[in-house]
Length: 79
Image 1 (cartoon, rainbow, N blue to C red):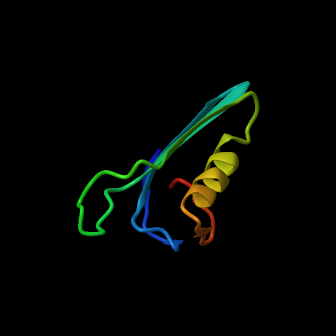
Image 2: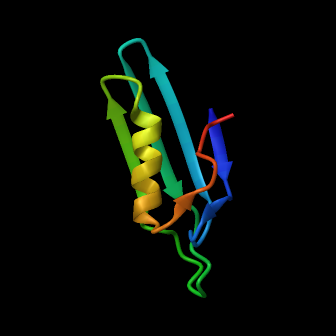
């Protein structure tokens, strides 16, 4: 599922993410939206995780929130 998450406290913009899984592995990727700090330029922040298990989404979300020096509000579950 593709989702856009506007509620990451401290993040300059939104995060666009996609997750997926099949038996045996899972994946998650997320990218910060364009930065609006006067430059109107694309952000350099992005994460891609491939896991031999079901933890890719939670690991990817944690890495993204760390990169953005932000707190994930209520998790980033795709729906």
